[in-house]
Length: 302
Ligand SMILES: *[C@@H]1O[C@H](CO)[C@@H](O)[C@H](O)[C@H]1NC(C)=O
Ligand SMILES: *[C@@H]1O[C@H](CO)[C@@H](O)[C@H](O)[C@H]1NC(C)=O
Ligand SMILES: *[C@@H]1O[C@H](CO)[C@@H](O)[C@H](O)[C@H]1NC(C)=O
Ligand SMILES: *[C@@H]1O[C@H](CO)[C@@H](O)[C@H](O)[C@H]1NC(C)=O
Image 1 (cartoon, rainbow, N blue to C red):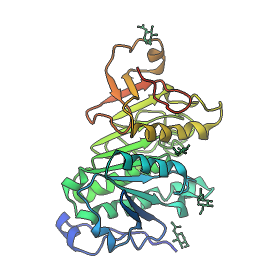
Image 2: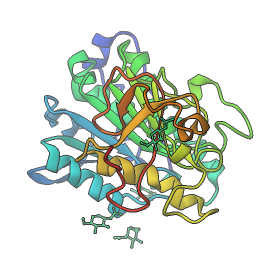
Image 3: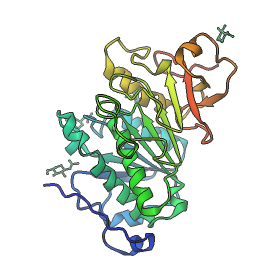
């Protein structure tokens, strides 16, 4: 049985004191907190208030048919702990996302977003200081869940989350066969800063620019170096491999350019540079291109 969490909003002050926010009532979305020095803790309506909200806080939302015990998630978390002391929350929505029926998972994206938004709001009411410290990272369908989280948080707090990173946000149901409006997917309006890494654009991934800054490694796909042509899953995953590496490296340097063709012709050699990944400057705007190696380390030092 599933319960859809309802938020009743009167004012931000009401939120802080009333009982309408809940994460426990949705057993299909489990949120687990990982920290550097203690064991993973599954969040519920009681312990959510004990989170140390002075720390930089990351939420990772995997995509369709992704288990939360996959090594890329563990490696991503480990890399953050190597970098510093963070709260890393991993959102398990496999009860919805592991269905072979994509449409079933797709239809739950908004509900999952609400549960995650509630958990963020419950941590500190609607503290702007805390929201300025929150970074969501979503892969594929999980990137659109992040879009909903951003929208829900804004609806309640009248303030945007600091950052969302979309790792090859899903295309099916968002870009084609139908085009979905900005309220129903990840967009540049979903957070104060939205960076997107496109790696399987046009097949599993969204090809068009959709963030504050859009990065197109090797043209954004559909095929990435190191992946076979038609191995869409391999190229779709490259977004998180690049991001994982970027947590400990500032070497993914991209150039602003209108297209991959112009970039490949060297026409953008002298244009503005931007670092792709975790260390992107939050003032970056526009479309950026870069080449990578076919295997780790993926970044090419230029
Ligand atoms: C999934 O559903 C089962 C059965 O309803 C439940 O026991 C479990 O807690 C749910 N959540 C997850 C994340 O598996
Ligand atoms: C991850 O979890 C799934 C489902 O619980 C299980 O079948 C699989 O063996 C696990 N994989 C690893 C690497 O632990
Ligand atoms: C995770 O990290 C280990 C150890 O560095 C590495 O051997 C493995 O290939 C990584 N796996 C993924 C999926 O990134
Ligand atoms: C652009 O840079 C590449 C790599 O450094 C170089 O091979 C190419 O000749 C340059 N092209 C132009 C038009 O400057």
